[in-house]
Length: 249
Image (cartoon, rainbow, N blue to C red; front, side, top):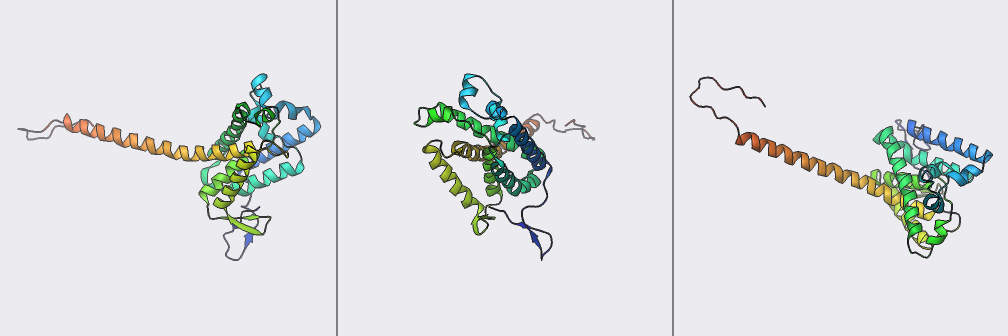
């Protein structure tokens, strides 16, 4: 997959969105460092990966935040960091580093919480999910991809570098795949429930945030109208004076 990047020059273009932005760089460095440490000390993966049985039974409440920095192999790490760079850089330029980092962590933790909740439900695959170990930044990366599709819906994403699909349709396809795969239970070494959780949490966070701003704006306009009405009601009307009375507003 790749997202095209157009340079300022009319006659030149480059692969990807350009240089790493500050938040993306920090995330890539942290993920690479965590991968190197876990390669030397494999027990770290068991302690800091996401395992619902450990979170619920042993109260290892840090796992929903730490699992996203661990990866099962070089290609697992490479794919996630490549996707984060291709789709995250332009979002960070649009949002700013602080908002992007907050979004990334909320979506990553939200994807883990989705996995936890599904593992506790009376579903056929819940018991297997409850004892499975999930690692990787894929949940957060899927959220970044959904945000990219919302902001740039017509941008083509090149599947296998040859087949262009508009971003909004690509996200619909991978969302449907994640949903169907999650319904079939964990398998194949892919955390489909976490991917699905990343998509859902990202959508709710972005759309919910816009509704929150809309409600706040409506409240502000209403209070401003009420204040103006009160001022008119208690205003002092001039009469019989040659000079106007100074009013404090």
